[in-house]
Image 1 (tube, one colour):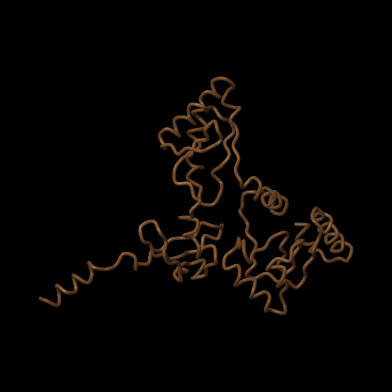
Image 2 (cartoon, helix red, strand yellow):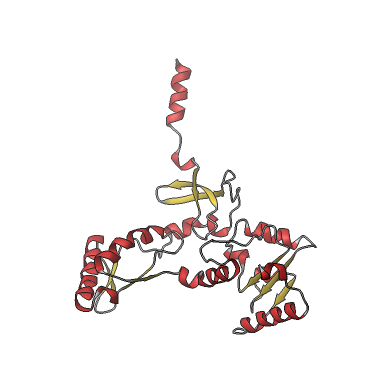
Length: 261
């Protein structure tokens, strides 16, 4: 009986700050699985989730520093209203929502809802805004919307349309198996953008049959381990790529079967 009581007592006395909780990093599109320990709002420990089917325990310095983004000293935790003298005063959420709503309704009533454009809802970790905006747009009579993906992904979808005949297939490059990885103005050693980025880059670097090519004015970390670093002058990217395409065409290096299909 005493042993059972001791076991129950030990189960109920588990320190909650020592428990690991499964979650995911939202600091890039890879959304690697992580496990965290928490103490109130503070994330005290972070490690990769080895059970995650995609990241398999991999994480980077951004994910390991997630508490910095969660609880950074400069993070806003309440609405701030700019006063006439240029300073900012903390106000309640109810006041902030009412003042913003009143101003939007005023613009709609004076100039029409089509004069208001919604921008947002596409960034990483901000998907709920995109879901709720439809009712706001309908209420105000708004017609136009955009988000950061319009800048970040427009070129990608345009290229997919040219390659595959449609823009909405969401194709992703297969850097894990490619023979030649080309990065234009991109430093995946830090920005990632595909699963297990550093592991993949190291695997390509250490394989004599595979190559890394980087177009970048900077000697970035990725450029530093590349096989070919084309240190183009800023603003000449298009010229450099046109020259590469010209050589491929002139020397018969294109995959004509793929292009014809």
